[in-house]
Image (cartoon, rainbow, N blue to C red):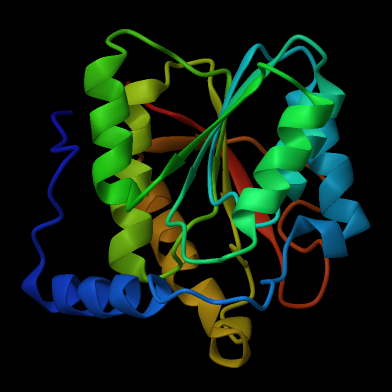
Length: 216
């Protein structure tokens, strides 16, 4: 299957994607929610990160997932991509560098471009574990989903965060809608192989995730 890793070409979704990115790019000081609030999800991350050497995440935020990955796999190096719209990320980045010197890289910018730029600058690099947890607009998630395939192989475990198997929840928790749609479409198109993990889809009310391998 030939995929375009740089452009998502739906006019209807592109407008929504651009608006979402513009909104998220505005600097903020209040912290977003994250895995630090959900012990069950932390356990999944710890389990999945064990024995990994190269880990990629989209969505650094407070650095909670990056910390879990680094602590769970003492030899791993983590590359984080973040839009950089929160003023507090610098302090969390410094904290990680102090605790895990030389093992973490933070790349700031729109992941629709920075993932492709990273791939071009590091040809042939493959990650053992990939976490997609950036912008939740459908168009943005779709681009991240497509771009990350070029940094994976058939053994790479991919986590798509904020996916639910309960459609009604996407009405109450709108941030679930984009990731869940990307996940559902990929399953129907047989672009991925689901890795069922007990409880993965419902770690707490309004929070879930799905794990998979890309098909090549």
